Image 1 (tube, helix red, strand yellow):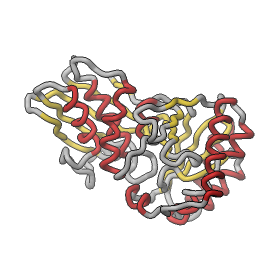
Image 2: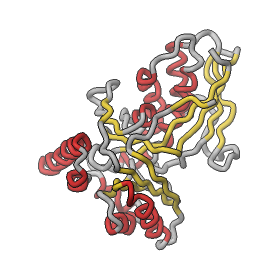
Image 3: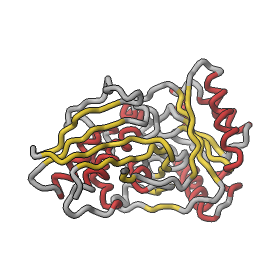
Image 4: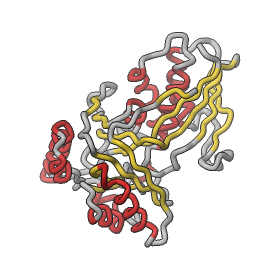
Length: 313
């Protein structure tokens, strides 16, 4: 056992357009870090929470009862820890309320770090239920579409009826994900409460058809079928108006050759899937469309098989 460890957990794309609350994709090169240190004092505490600028975060709480990292870590430590405790230092790399799985990344990084301090660490996939405790606090719901890909990497199918079991799906070679984050914020819990409570049978069947076709397309590496099936006829129409640049960015992605484009999670971030050779141009086109409306933004390009959480150092 070590007395201090650092874990990194990547951001993620929730829903992936076709799979509301049950499909998620990990993103490379952007995520949260949590440092966990053993303490003599029992329980989980938070030393500091730092933002993207490296300064103490002005909004996120260091109260262990109010932070997704400590809530997830406490669930794991209560179940498998000893009489001592753990101090967490959280370093945010994912913007808040961004649609990039910010709360999930903190929760996942925390459980991966704390797990390394256990006398008998669990296998990584066994950490999912504990990380979900943190996500439940943030979003007021049980869904793993951000937590599971952040923990395990890649494209994950995780319907609530199967939890804690999840399924890592095959991904087609040569396909990348582009994500653009406009400098806007959307509260996930509020966005969920605003969704309609009922849908027609026609809508439900159409969306299930797109989900089934997308999963089959990924397994077969069928790029054309991915393009035909990467559509959201239920959630996207309800959330598009809350993302000021949605129409312009989606149109720009399509003109640049994307296979499809939609909202990441509850937004405001937007993602596109595309052939790898087109990814940088598509990212540039999406950024330009956003900035043309006076909204600053940043983008990332990631393989669809990006790694999940890991220990560092």
